[in-house]
Image 1 (cartoon, helix red, strand yellow):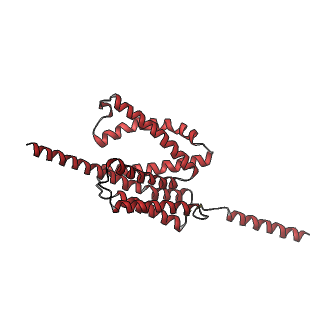
Image 2 (image 1 turned 90 degrees about the horizontal axis):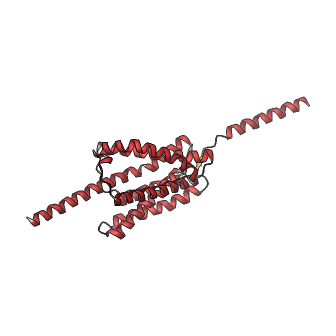
Image 3 (image 1 turned 90 degrees about the vertical axis):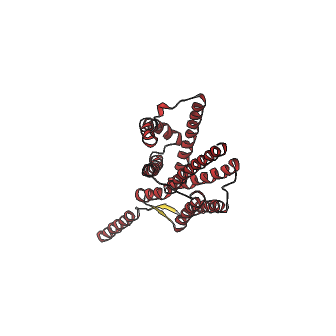
Length: 258
């Protein structure tokens, strides 16, 4: 009985690991769509134009991250709906953060202090409902301990720093640049995972994906910083032409009067 019990426990652990890995890779696929969605928002609302090198560098980053993170994907209805809502809401939030900072010249601390209460109120109301819908578990039924409370406080503290760094980066650059930089976090998470938890899953496939992603990020930084690499369409040319035409007509009238 002992060997059979040990084998069943091992199989359950492997099944749980596979389930967790499928969830992680599904989230990875959803994160890969963040950059295209952010680009669509900037093209629609800001009339942004991307050069060919900038587009190719973004595609290279997505290819590299996809190669090293996505292996097997399992999709269900609830997960798909949650992924769509998460991607579009996050993209809209990051675009709106950049829009507010650019329009009102707001600092990162100032904007964070004004948006944090609204985010807290929204999550306090919507969060428990979504948790129960997704997991069939009530958040109030959890048996809180000193250790769990400590990690909750630690997680909240790290989240404040994460949000602040997000606001600083988006204010300096754009939501698309923030997403490209964010994929570097994915690469670092993989590297730290291999360092602290073993190199069993480290292979040429993963290393190649990391190299492709890093090269794409370097290329994006170089391409987007060049003139014309990423710019808004200017609508001032027709106005200037009409003004020049008006000036010429006024000058001709003055010549006729003379």
